[in-house]
Image (tube, rainbow, N blue to C red; front, top):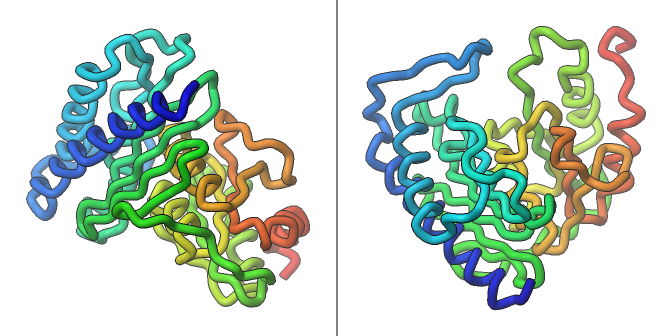
Length: 270
């Protein structure tokens, strides 16, 4: 894969992300149809569906032979292709439905199963994050880098809670409380792609979460890595996008955050 080819795919990802974001601007504050998708709190709106339609039109026009994995429509085209687009037309639907401005369109290209191109666009703040392997990462065209925080007590972290948190003891509550005590704070943003973009640009120092899907993570993983950060499993083994579990940091905090996650005591022991 040449750098020129990656740049072409990044241009396509950018077109798709901004097309979806334009739709989200149109529906902002004007939603008429908010539904749950079977799991309590897992929402879908007409904005999700219209944004996805705009994104798919861009991808089908520019990369018609590629497979697509999308949150609302599932698998489309040849998903066994070495080129697979993972798209979330509205990452942060609950935020969006409540007019809380932490949401984005997230577009990524996996090549042979590895995220290599990513674009995350928050239309409310008009922030476009872009990255491709070997190209670096940018926000609105300006290069971005991860933070320099080198200890947990000087860090600001972010995490999230999966839709199954009411049904499983592995719900991230204990980790949230424990890391809140060890750091300057832990935020809950409600949009994985935005959380990862903020780690990439140094606004946040680290992020962990479980229960995620490839379309939540793929674009943000590229951004963090290309901004100089590190992405692995909780135990620092290689990141597996199918696991739904991620640890992403500025690199300097990676070992200490991994250790804290693995040592988190159960809430019942506090």
